[in-house]
Length: 92
Picture 1 (cartoon, rainbow, N blue to C red):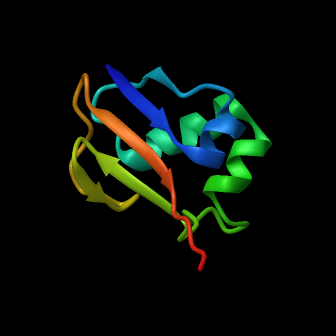
Picture 2 (cartoon, helix red, strand yellow; picture 1 turned 90 degrees about the vertical axis):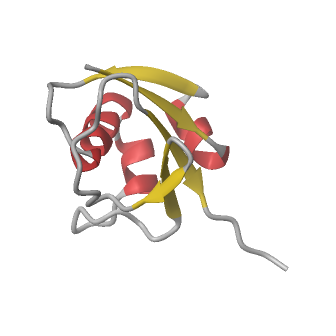
């Protein structure tokens, strides 16, 4: 199946592209997708997504379609789904 991935802000810079299509086996989860993305783009993006224990950093927000989700989203992804990776921005 094909999943559309969109990157924003620093994640877009680390990935080197604003978006892409990732091929995954049927029944893949959000966690599978993020692990594949880190594998494809290497350490620069991996360190922006995951901590040293393999958990998603709290500064990364995930949106499946228009719904914010967690990395442990229960349902498998469906062909043609769109996942947006956002970097939470703080400041004052």
